[in-house]
Length: 117
Image (cartoon, rainbow, N blue to C red; front, side):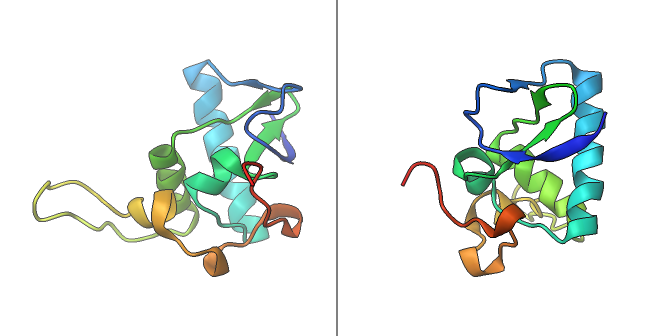
């Protein structure tokens, strides 16, 4: 499996990966690709941005929840665990799931347009 680029979540040329083993492989490939290229963006951009969804040579795309994308970004950026005192859960994904500012993002193809705009 090879990551070919980024498209938008609703691009019908590619279908969402629905096999857990393939999703795990695509997830790891995406982490490595984003580290190599310095990309970083929120779950909101992943779902609504013009170039937020990675696609592969299998004609599939990796579609994650915002929380799932935040977890992927925590891995990309190798963030330390942020254990919530109240919940006892790792919350390091939250910033990149929802709250990162656009000036923190580095987008594929330099695109900053959300498809919903």
